[in-house]
Amino acid sequence: MDNSSPLSFQESFDSVVFCRDLQFIIPSFLSAVSTFIILIFSITGKFWTRPLSAMIFAINFADYIFFIAKLSVLVHDPGSNFGCQIMQVINVFGLTCSASWAALFGHAFYKVLKNQHTSVLTSLIKYYVPISFILPVLTGTGTFFTDNILSLGDGVCVYRIYVGEFDWFVLFHIQLPMLIAVILCIAYYILSLRQLREIVIEGQVTEALTLMVYPAILILCWGPLAVMQLMAELGMKTPDSLAKTLRIVSHLMGFFNAVVYGEGVKGTMRGCFKGFRRKIKKIGFSGSYTEPPAATENAKQIIRQNSSKTNVRFDSRYHSMKASRLKLEFTESFKSSALFMNESGSLL
Image (cartoon, rainbow, N blue to C red):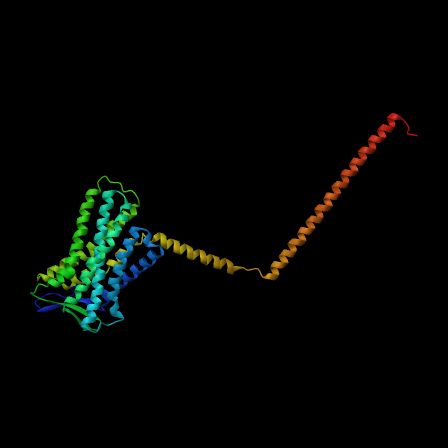
């Protein structure tokens, strides 16, 4: 849940889940657009052919679901408590799915370091996919078991928390899954650090680095907010400005995830842009100059005339050389005959 108001000594306070406040809409919009771009290029690059690409597609798709739910209030007002519940189901599913994948990224990073090869991801992906859906489905459908999700109108949905009462639903519904995911990421980092000593990773080193970054994003974006919300549940007062800042940071998680995978889709993006430039060049060359049919026929006729003239000149030169050669042979023959006549006397 998102805490947006101080506890003070109110009987209850509302944790805003959906609203049209620009300070929360802008980071959500930035994350939604960024993850959407990554999804498009992942599909173009056939993400299903490589396990790491499939994992990155899954976590960005989960982020996209989460932030699209946040932005949906711009075009649709839930209008009722049940409408807010439906939106919260989608919201929680996307959030816990993304958190699950972040923890799985931490596990994959540890396994790559332990096996010293990125090919281990091929055998792990078949387990990651079903695991990543179990917790989101449970937490998402669990939204229907509470009556504290309320609609305040004008696209605002809140979760009402009563001061002095420990809300077990919030604990098991949001806070505990997020804390478990963050703790698992930290635990896998600790295990991975032990493997990093004198280790050489075979395969794509960039893939190993990508696996390392995703859990860190979850820890930085949601770790402080989850701790602050747990403190609020225990009755500790939290500053309103800190709550808003941490909430804005959490809404940038999709953007950070997309930036990390920007290196992964760079090859696909470069290929798309090169293909686009090639098409533009072809269109430019074909449209810059086109010989009309009449000009083409004239050019062919000139070539034929030049060719015939060349052949005539070649033939004349050939016959001239042949005549000269015959004349030379005749002269030599005449000289030899005259010489014979002088030596043998008169022929009469």
